[in-house]
Length: 213
Image (tube, rainbow, N blue to C red):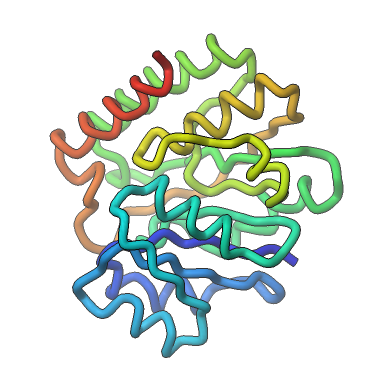
């Protein structure tokens, strides 16, 4: 069954909820990216496997988790309680069954869960992704699943917020069967380090624009 890679930076509030809802057979792997709020200790106490990635960056944490994972299929998801781990089987199922090589969870945002500047940035990126990759995706979803060895073979280079975008672009270029399923998206627990401010969103978009260029 899959390893669930959870990049974490100061998510002490959300971790108990996220880990308590992990589906049977899905193994949580928390990648602590320099938390100062005891996130690693909390995750360990709740039975999750914890690895530490001192180099800051979302992609750096994802890559560390990918290297540390032991299962054939891996999932990625944010660990801020905006996404429910109970939706993971719907995303991972087509990969496990051999029907898809990469599946993304398209966020179906509840009212107030996604700020206007985030909605706008996401729409622009999704449109550009469709144009560049030829894959009909509505969202660059942070919940996703693929096979570990195949992901390593993509040789993704970005170690910041361009990681998710580069994954899809490289997978599409290699002819992967890419799919998408809708997943509920809720207001996160705590303040986002990325999209909680316009500055954070701009930083993420800048990283992704670097990948597109």
